[in-house]
Image (tube, rainbow, N blue to C red):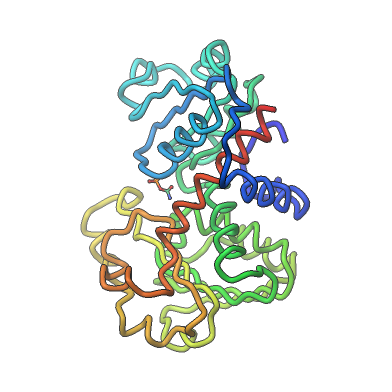
Length: 299
Ligand code: CP
């Protein structure tokens, strides 16, 4: 594994290796990345991904150089291309964690980089490390991934985490997916084609009423305000699917509720105390998965 750019690059063997390493790093006291430098280059806002990568690097003994809001605070503001920025950061760091507003940016970055590039979210493209931590959450909280019934809810057109996780789920057996969204925010044809090729059963619905009692995991997502052309357009969909204790009561007792976060209003705060709520745990698992990825890439 040289770069981490998209979920399709992982096979079941790689995924298992990352999960085993993540398990082993829970009580880590070693500093295998001492002397290594991670550059975190974030052109879009982030709380979880940037801090968890930076924390992961520091916990493994490495160092971090960083620019948040790189669109404004890096030389991108003066017109520097992503390729030139990556060529330069190659001279100063051992690994680059890149969040960018353009789909495909990390593939462009990886093409000119001699050091590993990790895609930390590229526009409406992918977020592969989020997908790995999502899958790890399912494994840890449900105890299996095969034979899973999962509902993805919300802005499935613009949400990169759903796209990346769907690619990973395509590698498992007897998965059943429900895509719940307004017609205008449906999951992309590329994902549906991929699932068909991998013989994964899926249904597209606008309403979640009929499936709440069937699913093992509900993956709620935010309506992605920043991807809409106008506030008016965003307001049409905001608040369309709000998970309250009313819906949670219809979900099976052993099922889990996930969300890549940040949340706006799509999960009521009252749901946080439900034993089914796994979204804060999910963010916590992200630290272990990102430690595992950094260790695999740099040692
Ligand atoms: N899930 C996720 O990518 O969160 P951030 O945008 O806060 O990094």
